[in-house]
Amino acid sequence: MTTPLTPAMTDADRIARAKASTSVFTKLLPEAFAQDAGRAGPLAGQVLSVKDLFDLKGEVTRSGSPLLADTAPAIADAVAVARLRDAGARVIGRTTMTELAYSGLGLNPHDGTPENPLFPGCIPGGSTSGGAVSVASGLADIALGSDTGGSLRIPAAFCGLVGFKPSQMSVPLDGAMPLSESLDSVGPMARDVATCATTWQVMSGQTTLGDATKIAPARRELIVPLNFGMSDLDPAVTAGFAALRAALDAAGWTVREAELPVLNDYKNLPVWQFSAYESLRRFKARMDEHGDKMDPRVRQRMARGAEVSEADFAATLAMRAELIAAFRAQLGDALVLLPTVAIQAPRFEDVANDDGFTRINLLALRNTSLANVMDGCSISLPFGKGDALIGAMLTGLGGDDAALLAAAFAMEADLADA
Image 1 (cartoon, helix red, strand yellow):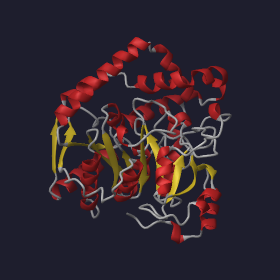
Image 2 (cartoon, rainbow, N blue to C red):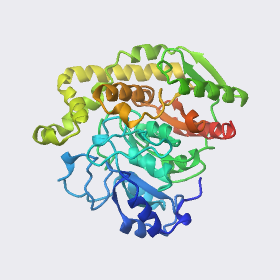
Image 3 (cartoon, rainbow, N blue to C red):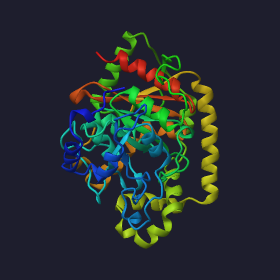
């Protein structure tokens, strides 16, 4: 695990620096930060930022939306937050996010969107935008976020971090505002795999904590699908992924290209229905009354849920179940290797108009959404530096979190000098 950032500055200095960081936090919590000091545990002293969709006792859970501004304060911490605090993590504040977590780019017209700390003038990715920036800029050690279609791994790729989407079943969702009950997962971002692994162990409620990166043998067989995820890449992503494969070959990994037939069928699944139908079902009454206050892009995508009948959605769920079974059979013990995102961090002006936003958002979510729909686990590692930075994504089957983390830990070590 990385050395906690806390000793580098006083608590007062950290809070002051966080206050000066534009659009990273929706609210700082200096009293909670002070109260959390001194707790023992595997995360002792680690500074934790919390995405605005998690309950914190006594705070209103807004999920970045004016629709929820008048809701009652939470009566308890979300389960994931409570477990992290019990393990010694210190909550510094709530971080900005896409409204209701409904995009992969991180834009929020209500609370503002933080600038990517690595690439001036560029977006951070989302929906866990403030969380990524809090870690990448040194304000936190760990960002707690959610991932419905890439909301941890996209900003991790854009901001040079590790982002881990665990198997949905492994971390309780209690106290986290849903976007899609079918696809939502809770996970961390940090600067290295070990910190993400320990954070996941704590959140998943494991009573005996060992080294999560070594509790399973590292799987070194990787499949690059010939029929998914490798089209429409930025030139820098194409070059970076080629360099990644060369480095893995040199380190003794087995990287092979193969067509997974299930991915041809996957392209026929109306993935958009999950978030649209399930979020509209949850927020329709509030949207009918106060929809004019919403980000128009979020409102329009959520409104599409009205096009989906109960029978339509049941058919989509059934098709998804078949795809999950086929994915498990065809992938076996291998892991999927892909660029996390087909593009590098776009500039703010690239997503200023609706056409640019829609095109880039869909492309950003394409590769990462696979793990959510297939009920898998997935992790993004940073590879390359400066303008050559990309995300390297490993995806495994649901329940294989320990094996995935072991592979990621081995890959991180092998790529350290690449």
